[in-house]
Image (cartoon, rainbow, N blue to C red; front, side, top):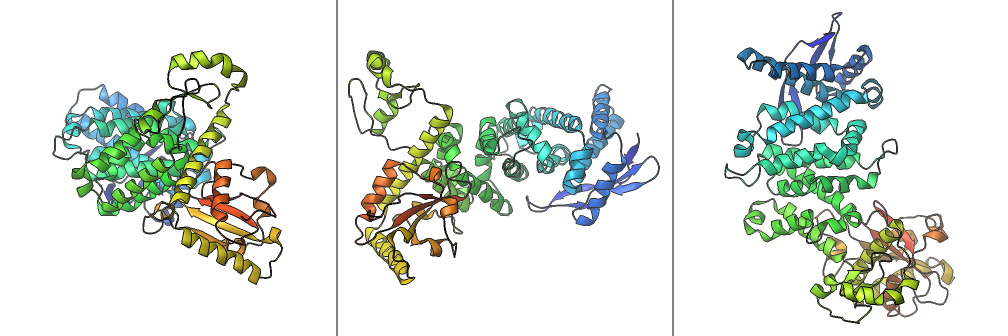
Length: 521
């Protein structure tokens, strides 16, 4: 071959999050030149770049994988097993070294996608083999298999191209086989989950993959679908289980993943309902005293907050059958109602009622587009969140904060009603202590002038084009009711909701609720 490894290397995990090499990871070309492509400091990065720039064609993965496949056809002698082990090491070391140390442009330009695909397919096959190994099923330990196969995945998925290709694979095979790996362990070693090493690995994978999914890759897949893909493959559900058995050093990364779930709560809401894998798993964890007593308490507290937020987003339902007018406030009845699949606006208690009402309903049944349906779900969730917030807010605190905010505007010399802008800030993201301000009882909230709220922003017109004005009647009516309790509060009221994504934004966006000269609010 045109290049060979000339020194051995060992991997160690320091604390389930950080890693380090012992010894150099060196590649030697046929002309005698050597390149250090491994290590954990930036001094080694040029070696990875120089290696990729000097090897053509870059077919390392294909050639080594073919050698492994050929060796597997031979009789399993001690020499063959030793050679196989060495080939696995070489593939793993190169994947880690290049993905960790090569410049993004060099990595993208010099490693063909066909090579990355070959590595992906090989890795998927090896994980499947591992899932069926009796030693894994019984002990949940992988030994060197972890270093050779799983460890490189952690770093390759931090690169845009491998991550995008993993997401684009049919049914997300890489993530699916990783989820199957966790499910294959039967807990015969006395632990309900595999080793600490594997639990930390699964959290790392979800974290790295969700980071990669924040960015589009050649417009071939949508960034906001990253977590949905992870949920569909089953790895998100398994990561929730793994979080309950982490060592302290790995907890911060798990908290980071939960924080991202809070950010994506609008899109993931339905996936945490009863009857969905993630929702059922989360509820089962919180109901099992044996799990909650042994799991990291920070994780359990965030799980409770996450579930409370998801349930708070469930639309407020007070629907009745359009045909027979049957109605009940009970949750069971409201869930049993069937929505018209065409317009998604009316409900029936049975198929018979729907058929009987069709002639009457047909002239008004306008098909619901996918985009309109998505917006409707999001508005229903926002309605629910706002109504549950306004019902629990401390009215005396509310009146005092609004009065002070309007008074501060006047003290600044802002007299014209149309110039007085006050912001109601509702925050659904966890704070440094892990609590969600808007979910407290009573909820914590902020009322301040626009200038105070945004720390000196001159004006919000650039963030409030006419087409962005929020026209949800339930929320506007709720705000009107709240503001009517405050005497002489005339001007513009702006609503700022933090923590909801897609419809609101990845972090937050200001929506104008009312622009009226005579309305107190």
